[in-house]
Length: 281
Image (tube, rainbow, N blue to C red; front, side, top):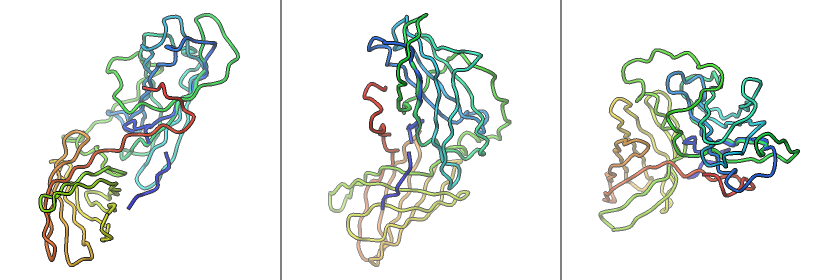
């Protein structure tokens, strides 16, 4: 069963589209800037947006840079747009990492779904009335060191183990399962929703069996336990352990049809919206 989703990630990890207005005709390399968005780890009421310009020509500039982030807060999906450049910093130069924090104020349970970046580019010191360029948010990890634009948001005191609790398992996952009984391998989409530690969702099936799954997630150990009544006099159970952004473990059947094997969940790779260009990294 596949859930229809908005927009990603821009995979922040993710998918963010940034609209930057560029000033001029730039060499090809000037289009290699990379943008990232993620919840700020020390205060998840804020979104941390980073733009890495190390891929641009040294005389290139980016101006009129704005960002749009699509996100999920609980069961609600929304998007917001902010101006990245303003009176405090009007242009972004090459060979830098710029970082800015934007107030989202949606609570700590936030998942970045995607976004975009739009800008005008040009050569240093010159302005050209060119159309804006739009790019997809990168699904990678932003550099640690950056020049912070504007003020830092206040840090929020976090309880012990809060970093683990913050990990959000809600959303779409791509699964791979291999049966030790039949030798078959299957792939598809699992969509999860959470309410506290309880988990509910659906899984794409290939044998017309029931795809509703229920279970729980133990944030302190990173253990995801799931179960589904297949409707075929068989219950399929899963126990998975988290390693970074991946869950892996095993499944087994209880009931009429015996089966067991491996099961793995990974986040789908974000797909750039059409017309966004192929040079985004």
